[in-house]
Amino acid sequence: MAVGKELFKLFGMIGMQGVEKVEKDLKKVDKQVRKAQKEIDRLGRRVSDTGKVLTKVFTLPLLAAAAASVKFIDDATDLNETISKTGEIFGESAKEVEKWAETAAVRIGQSKTQAMDAASTFAIFGKSAGLAGKDLTKFSTEFVELASDMASFFNTEPDEAITAIGAAFRGE
Image 1 (cartoon, helix red, strand yellow):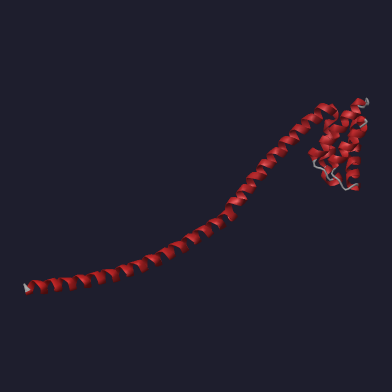
Image 2: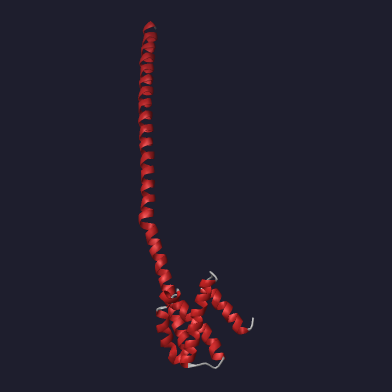
């Protein structure tokens, strides 16, 4: 029976040493896992930073280009509609108004579309007064230029001056 007790002690000691070794090995593994987790976190931050840079370098310019394309298409559509409207209002004199409007940006600070829209607005008043042809063209374009001068003088937008002149023509 004494041998049994000794064997039990011996197996117990071997078992305890095994448990201690397993604990020691587990601590090493835990340390390595924590180190790996830090590296993974660091890599994640780098990938995130790279994503932010790529967004700034590629995505934002693409979005800006898309927005510019949409604006360009809208502006082209507006110009075509304005040319059509000008043709209806001025008839044969429409080409003369369009030619005048091509230099409006330099002369009066309005785009071609803005100048033609304004000329069409004033042409409606001119037609009501019985003007036609070259007289209608001269009346309309001169009032657009006057509206731009007034806007500059009063530090406002040409559209506001055009609206004010139109209100005066309507007796408002």
